[in-house]
Amino acid sequence: MKPDDLEERIKSQPWRAIPSAWRESVLAAARQETEPPHGTFGENHGPRGGTVLLSLRVRVAALLWPSPAAWAGLAAVWIVILGFQVTSRETGQAPQAQYAMPPSDQFMQAFLEQRRRLAEFDGRYEPPPFLRPKSKPNRPRSDRGNQNFATCLTEC
Amino acid sequence: MASEDNEMASPLDLERLYDEHAQALFSYLLNLTRNEADTRDLLQELFIKLVRRPSLIQEARDQRVFLLRLAHNLAIDLFRRRGSSEKHQQELVLPKDPLFAPASHPDEPAFREALETALGDLPAEQREIVHLKLWEGLTFEQIASLLTIPLNTAASRYRYGLDKLRQRLRPLYDEIK
Image (spheres, each protein chain N blue to C red):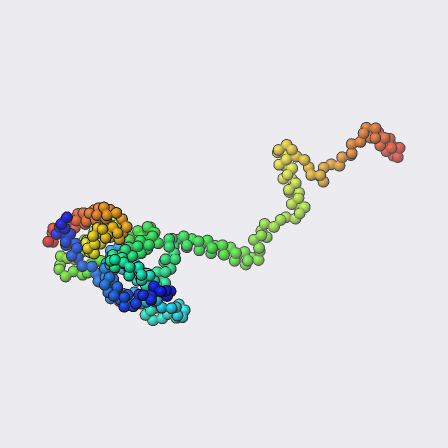
């Protein structure tokens, strides 16, 4: 299909020239990839410092892929967790102290009461052995009669 | 990091590559991103990638097509990193950098401005194919290979994009020609 005059007009529009200053900075950043690392990041001053920062920006952006927001959220969660840790240390109270067990007898009473209520609700309450009323041993009627007679002999 | 590959990419090669292709890459990336800072970042990232693996371009049949493909992939990565919401906010808030050179003829600024607006309103996939066809002169086969899309898709996206440009620019063009 032969291009029409409008298409030719569009095609003839000249693009803006690439800024001449980019040549040195782009090539310098690329050349750095071939050079062994020297010094620390803080020692890169002068014209190449800007290129280093630009290159660092590009690499940080690549690290944060796919979602900078997700990384920021994760960092915020960690900061909150650390904040709780710091404040609990400052109050001098270990987190576990908030949940310290009550004295043992009170705990036992509360436990037993709860158990009793639950069992009553179920209809199968059976008090623990140390709370059961002491019951006399079942003896044969003849023995019980003898016991009563013996008791009477001593007490009457 | 220095590797065997890095020794093959001499500084002279880099400079030659830059002098031959940087303008085309700049225009293409600027049309895609509509942002000069992003274009610069992507161009730098592209040359850093070349230095890390010079064998890739040395083995390429067509250096220009290879570099445009690399630029396209880097731009896609940038858009994915940004996410669609941030990219949309940027498009709304930030003024777009001019695409075309200053005009000498008095009628040209209006036409160029209208063309920039019309290009910006095209979907990204149509815009880049129009750019590759009109300003880079690539065939549909080369465009399809570069963008890894079917040949028919490349042709149809170009046709739709060009039709939209014609619709937007025809009234102004008929007025000024």
